[in-house]
Image (cartoon, rainbow, N blue to C red):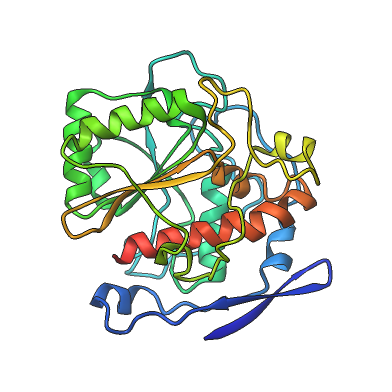
Length: 306
């Protein structure tokens, strides 16, 4: 095992990285021989600042996230954070729509992947319509705030084909029973023959790169709720329709070879942990550093290689 140390306010904490299974696929061997390339706490602390409220239109403001060059002649051989743009069946406020945590979550996670792993990432994340043929160029897509998602029959067929052809989708930041019902209803339209199954904390996805302890709760509320409940142990968001917000659920839809096609993160907000890494030092230390970045890295590397 490889051990590195992360620094947080001068306190050293060990993070253990497990070596990859060399008997795996050629994709796994060629894509990732990962080691951390720096000290995460020092690196991430450079982004202190507030969030942006408006949904950006046109070219995105990087908000201080650095650009980096792509290797000449290999510009397309990189990982791109691809966010699905979808329609909603209710008027949306800023926390319940395709643009939840956009663009800072997308920019920050892309930068951290480039900075702290051997996976080369594109500096410009992608927002993509479900019906865009370019969807099939991106093996991993992210969907956030999708409790009120609405899809057409054509979009259902496209998503089904994308996922069965090897694509993987992470669905994040939907809370309570009503939003669960909304997301699961769409998933059932895409895969009427498949069940949504629980993913236990013993699953390799939680231990693939970062060995996240099974005892560490991975629930993350939005920044405002987290700070308001600082040191109380409350990490959930009440007030969502239908209740059922206090327990985090990781669920998935598997293909015929038990590959995870859809990974559902219910009652947690990983995107806020990426977006808000620079908004509050305590939130960064308790959530971004301990939970959201390790889980994000694990999910991307696992889903991209299985």
